[in-house]
Image 1 (cartoon, rainbow, N blue to C red):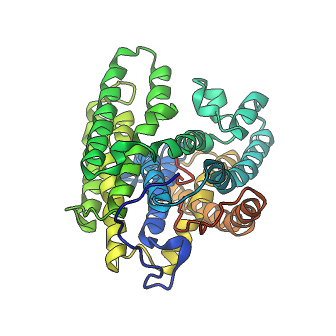
Image 2: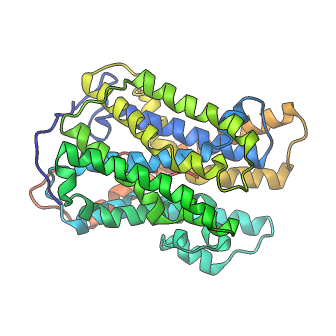
Amino acid sequence: MRASSARQPAPTTDRAGLSGRDRLPSLTGLRFWAALIVVLYHLSRQVGEIPWISEATWYGRSGVTFFFVLSGFVLAWTYDGQRVPAKVFLWRRFARIWPLLAVTSAASVAVWIAIGKEVSTKAVLATLLMVHAWVPDTVVLKGANPAAWSLSDEAWFYLIFPLLMLLPMLRSGRGRFWVVVTMTLALVGVWFASALIETGATRVWLLDYFPPTRMLQFVIGVAAGLAVKRGWRSPVGLPTAIGLVALWHVALVPWREAAPDGLWYSPYSASQLLSAPIFALLVCAAAQADLRGSRTGLGGAWAVRLGHWSFAWYLVHEIVIRAMLARYGRTETLTTTAGFWLLAIVISLAVAGMAYQWVEHPLERLLRKAGPQARKTPAPSGETSPATSGSLG
């Protein structure tokens, strides 16, 4: 896997004293905020609503789109120009996401059993093999750890990534531009084509879970990552990009009132499919701010630490919410809802921090050392993962 071109050198250390893995620290910090809107999305729909916050994050599942775009961006940025055999790359990605997937799936199944719900063996195996998003069956998609469906999509992205890096169109600025345009139009086309699907469950699966559909967002991220790495500068700065993301989510509020989620043209799927270009602008703007050495408020020590925890937070937060709902039930008042939210966020984030420190990070290092190694090529740094490892949703 190799490509060469003039590239913008990345700083080895940011102003917070971070280096290596976090050479673009603002992207790591953004991961926390993307995970947070997914957590708030689940709290709003599963526990109870809090005015304003729930309205703004009612379609917070779009955070998974951010992670898919970010995944493509970071992988392209990291591996552009690297001589890394495909088997080494794939082993590194396996080491990055699978250990925590296995541990959290076991925890999720334990909670399902504890609250008296039957668990499908087929669903658990499909989850551990990371093929569950290919099956249009809700039991299989969500039977082990519901949040883990996006890792099935990520596994597909990883398989095709070495091939994507060989595409001639991605080697020129004009080619990358047309790749982004084509992928964006394809997303719009898929959304409109969903009007032809009568069964709501099938439509949701094809638009929200099916790996080839979500791959379009990943490819946008790859093109954006290569563009920034090779010197392209977005005309949109970070404050403007953040504003565009905020405006997009605010616009979904009246749209929701006009079109219920059951309709194909509702904002439910549109919010996830059509947000990819906006998120790409955000990622590019944050990366370019880091390259300039600007202070963004996203790259401090605590912001990066929370970003590191985001993958684990994504995988454990719904498990914590489920266990708390089994114990306390749905809330009745705004006060109890706010208390439930706060407790769930604190507990799940604390568990995520421990999972990162004691499971995710050490097992990744152990597996990477045990697997195949690239010869005479320094191990790439700067990988951030959800979504890169994941995802959210």
